[in-house]
Image 1 (tube, rainbow, N blue to C red):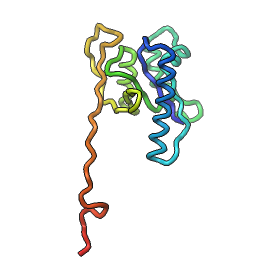
Image 2 (image 1 turned 60 degrees about the vertical axis):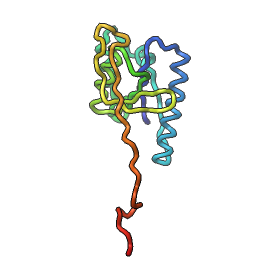
Image 3 (image 1 turned 45 degrees about the vertical axis):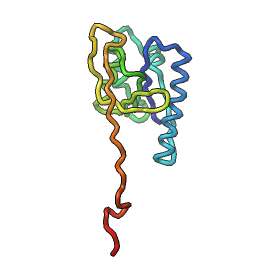
Image 4 (image 1 turned 90 degrees about the vertical axis):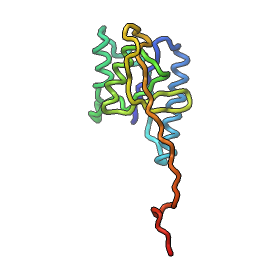
Length: 156
C-alpha cells in the first residue's frame, strides 16, 4: 500500500480537500497503470485528518510524527509520498516537506499533474501561513531518439 500525505492550506474547505484527494488518488493510480501495468492500493490522508488524529498539543511533535511514524506491519515509514498544492505554504507544512525531501518523494499538485519539489525555502519567516516558497524541479525535455534502439549502429 502507498500512503500519501496531502499537505493543504488550513484555509482549504473540507469539500475542496476531499475533491483534491480523490483526484490525486486517481492520478497516482493512472501513473502506476501507465508505467507499471498495475497499481498498488493507494490511500491519501489529508493533513487535517492526520492532525485531528495525532495532535497532542505540540506542533513540532506532530510534524516529526508525520515523518517518523511507521507502519505497524512493515516497519516502513507510514507515508511513502508527500503532496502539496500551490507554490507557497506555512511553517508546519514547510517543516514536514523539508524533512520528507531527504528520503521520500515530494510533489506539488495542480489538480491535474504532479510536479516534483526540489526544496522549500523561507520567503517571509514572520508569515506562518504562506511564508515559505516551494521550489519545483525543472522538467527535462524529452530527447528525440535519432537512431532508434540500436544506439546508432546501422547494418551495412
